[in-house]
Image (cartoon, rainbow, N blue to C red):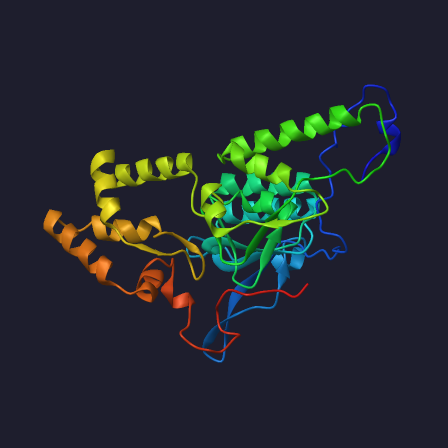
Length: 332
C-alpha cells in the first residue's frame, strides 16, 4: 500500500499518504459495493441474489427505448472499504444517470468495520454529489473508515452503531518527514469534515480516540455532530428548492414545515419526514385543503407515514417472509 522508498527521500510527503489503514484489528474481509434487484417469483416481488457492480454480466442492460424503466435496486456497502468500492460507485453513478438503475428509497445501507480512509472519503464525496442518503441498520455497524463514506449521505440515519477513532500509519519507520505527514493528515481530515458541512467538533472527537480503540458515538453526539439527520447547509438548500416548487416564500414554507410531523427515516433511525411527505400536505388545492391535509398527516400513525414516504409502495410487501422485498443484509 505504501512505497517505503519514497518515505526515505528527504522532505518528501508521498501523494498517496492518505492510503491509511483504519480497519479494526483482525478485520480483512472485503465485500464490494453490491446490490439486489427486484424479481417476480411465484407472483411475489423478491430481491434477487447479490450482484456486483464490478461484474459486467450483473450490470448488462440490453433493454432500451422510451418505455424502458429504471431497475430499482437495493444497495449496500459491506466489508472492508477499498478503492474497488470507489470504482463500483462510479459505475453505479453512471447507471443512475443513464436511467438504467434507481436506488430504492434513494438510500445505501452500510455494514463495515473500516478500511482505507482515502477510499472512504472519496466514496463519501461521490455519494454527496449524487444526493444519496445513508443508513446503518439496527443490527449493523459502521466503523473507522466506513464513517467517512457514511458521512457522504445527504440525509443520514443510525439505528445500529457508528464508531470513530484516530487514523494511523501502517508503517513504523521514523522517517524525517513523519511529523509533516501527520500534519498533512490532520489538514486533510479537517478539510473533509468542513467540505461535507460537519462541525469541527466531529474532527476533534475523532482525533481524541486512540487508534487502538474505537468509540461508539452516542445518540446525543450523533445529532450534535450532524451524523444523524441532515447538515444545516443541505437542509437550507433542500428547503429552498421545496419552497420554489411550491411557489412559497421561505418564511411561508418553514411555517408549514414546522407544522408537519416528525417520523421515522426509512425503517430505522430518527429524522425529519422526507420532503415529499411534507409537500403532500402543502400542495393541496387551496389554503384550507393544505391545512386539512397537514392535520391529516399529524394524525397518521408512524407506519402510515413511512409508507407514504416510499418512492413506490408496491415494492414493499406486507409479509413476514424474509425473502420478500425488504432491506437485505450480507454475511461477512
